[in-house]
Length: 276
Image 1: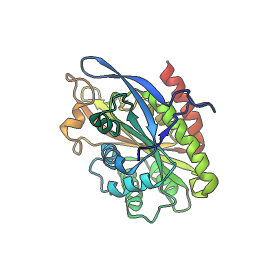
Image 2: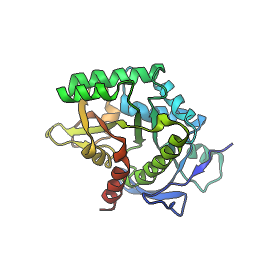
Image 3: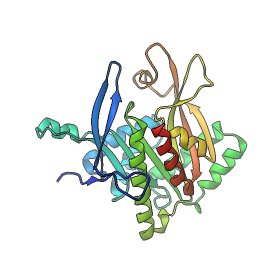
């Protein structure tokens, strides 16, 4: 059975007229037109989703297999980004199953005792202790406390897919969270935590860029954040995708924590950001 297609929503209450979104993808030599649509997370998306999570967490001691299974099992929450193909051949069907992005949230409150969630909580606490200031360390520990409702916001996609695609994906997720919390109070998140892929040129380490451009908006709205280099964990293939061939860059990860009630405003700001 094929994956159910989902309408991608914009920041208003109205659905986008078409289920698919056309975007231009830049590669080294030219610009390619592609059509994408959001779909439910399905079992056959497992490897694609896990691969995207590995980009964010690299060699962290977190069971991403279990995380991926949990994301797929959260039925009705989140979307994977798929390319639309008019070719009905078997090869085209295989291509249409490739996961180009995933936007969802892991309910860390409801699954706090699951091993991978415990690993995530420990990972964030350890990293905050290493790289955050005193206030950030204290607040991270408080927010990750058992009495707080927190979700891991995941916003991953292939490089060079424009930021504009994030608006309908995030808007759709926001509506899904609203529906979920009517059934289950554990989705009444107080805070979100997310991991952003960033990089800095070796020649100017003060200049930080985001692999997903729109995540600069999340960063500007974050209540707390800390950043750490992953130069030793990232292989040359991953690092080599950032920047042009003439400019060497250092890959980082930036962890953001922000109040859940900011999400609607952040999506609105991203919508304005991608239109400028």
